[in-house]
Amino acid sequence: MLRIHFSDGDLERTQVAEGVDPLWEMVFSRLRLTEPDSGLLLQPWLRDVRRNGDRQVITSGVRMLSVLAPKGPYFPDFLTPPEGANGLGSALAAIRSTPRQRLRREFGRLAEVRPTPSWTRPLAAGDGESLLGLTEALARYHRAVVEPYADVIDEAVETDRVHRNGTASTAEDLLKGMWPLMNWRPPVLEVQYAHDRDLHLNGRGLRLVPSYFCRRTPVAFADPGLPPTIVYPLHHDWTWQRQLSSGRRDEQALSALLGSTRSAVLAAVGTGATTTELAERLGASPSAVSRHTSVLREAGLLTTERQGLSVLHQRTPLGSALLGQS
Image (cartoon, rainbow, N blue to C red):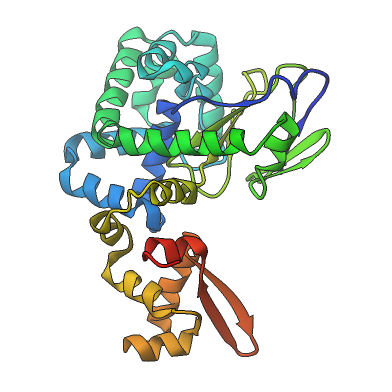
């Protein structure tokens, strides 16, 4: 659990970021590319990257980020500078100008978590050519993995920001609306987190950054001296709801998103069905149906409620809307 302690002036200085932070998206995209299940809503991106992306650039970038930004419990903060709020160019310039003392400190901490290969030593020493090579490699990875999907990512981040700001008249309302990722217990914001720590804002406020590729739990800077920031997984459902309400439903995009089998499962649910009933309707095994309903439930398209020895699946309003049903 991460406990963020608010004091005088912190609520007034708390806000949702206005746009995408490219370095955080690169770090999280690497995780999505290498995990067994990247989630239903990221499948179209994942398939397209694997089919059409520059394999050499992607493979090289994934290997590099796997070393510099491993999946917990720590990766160096210099890799995701606050200047990312001003775009990729500003972020890469900030990386190149990272003070040597800070690089030594952060790479030293990284080495305590897991062994670092020899090629990281010039970076840890602040070698200018190595830092330039790093930022050039990051730029190539961004062009291959993030930039081609900028329109989709930008719209999703903007939708999340507009929704949260539009439903909150005060900063406290904004923090309350972050449930279940975060729990506002004035004057402390409790955040689902991998390990136990406290962060005191001390009048600096809090910047909330929605991320397209972040999943499950938010992430904060490891260094409490940096501008207080929480990067959190945006609510993908709101993007679909916005498209549906504006009449922008795309049958091909929906088919690519769900796949024919999961589309059939979602349609077969009807007004409600148990796993056994779905298996009979689709001519599939109950175990196969369970795998698909689990994915659809995680995506917010189904709800599941246990009734005795059976479980009842029902479509959510979003699931029905995606099928063109009211």
